[in-house]
Amino acid sequence: MDTKRLTIESVNLDDEREMDALVDQMFTVGLARVKAEGDELRRKGLLDSQGNPLVKELPADMHEGADRDFGG
Image 1 (cartoon, rainbow, N blue to C red):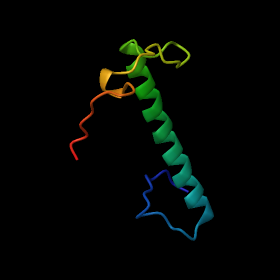
Image 2: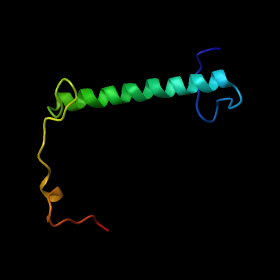
Image 3: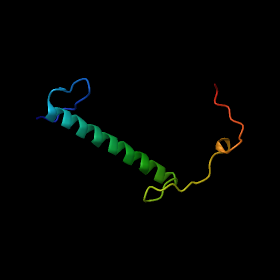
């Protein structure tokens, strides 16, 4: 099997190996995105090195009883 980039439109749904390759590609891309987001949150000081949140307080509009406008 070659290493072409598969998409839901291009994958042969009847080929189990090709479906497995699609899933592998999806996981690889997804994990890279999650890692990049975590790196960004660490750079911003919002996560520690283990991925735990460093900011515990909620924004004012999320507190119980806050006057909220959801634009609806």
